[in-house]
Length: 521
Image (cartoon, rainbow, N blue to C red; front, side):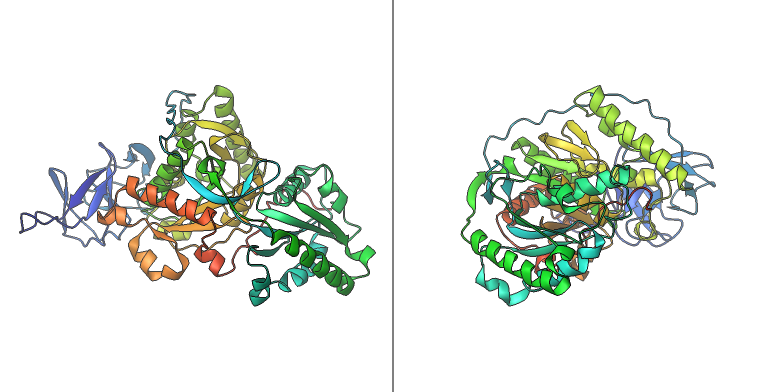
């Protein structure tokens, strides 16, 4: 990146304040880091551009004249095509920039970067499970097979909220994982398989040391179907109840409370041990993105991802509709053509999926994204893939599939935050880092969720909801590398038991939202 400022400071030793960033040589637009008023002179290296209109912070400023129909570049990549003539110094946004159909010539493995192993082994304090995996939390999970048992599950879990848990200080809590489906959904359908895979992923999660599967008793997605050959660790305590067989809601709540209390007594005897960072599975996600996401929090998280890969760990990028337009950058990093083709197959699936629904994949960014300075899905996607760093892409998974490959991986999920994070956690992510520009709030029980703000202004405004400020990259008080190291350090602390702000607020139960697909009969 090159930095832009309004001019030289009078004091030779002082650093002029930044006004805009030019992200790559040859870019047609710069990103403002303050509100720029019409008539302001903005220095871009050896060039000075005078703003011809007001440009809000985080938005785009034209650095050269752009006639109608011109492809516009940011990050060195095409982000759209002008819909009108754009003068130098003009605000570039939805009023003069539209989507562009970019035909990529896909390459496979041509930009592979093998991250060298770290010279120093990082560690954290985790729960070593009997199957060899490592958890970052110790939860009793109440997994419901059907929506009909959701209220009962919450009644049981609610008996273990607040000070009552002081009796089990080495257990992180009891969480009811409820959903809106499970009956009327054909189990063999695509939607039925996705739901079953998601529920089994949570039931077998290394952060779930005690499991109660709760059903009604007559649903299509039956309790025994979830438990059959469950790939849970042998030391997971597993029980199941059905409301109809137990005698109704009240009887089931009483029985469930007894079951959970017995599990808690057992789990209280378990302790954390020192384990290498290679045992972490890190979920990479974002929501409420803005014009800073792709230049602060996302590349810093990408740096943290690379650092974890260097330790031998695993990271998981997701949100397929929000890598659309930047997927060619990921295929170039694939370890094989087969891995790259698997990503393109998922893109093709999404093209067909939204077409059948009467939409298109460029029906994005959201109103909040646009208010923050993002104009097209191409621009948003280029910033979003920065969360994946530079490491080679080792595997591509379907929604909620178990993540078994180490290194940097990708999971096919929707862009909707709770659904996407649910899929990643079902795949085995033991910590999630969530970057946000507008100020999204999210939890991800049973995995802790670290929230990283893209701007200092938002971080200060929502300080009680954010874990880390990446906006210092824009103000010049920290580099991407420095913040990336901070993120990994925070992840290791959180993996060792440090509570995130989401956990302090007890978030994460209602954000369990499995992806619903298929016909309901």
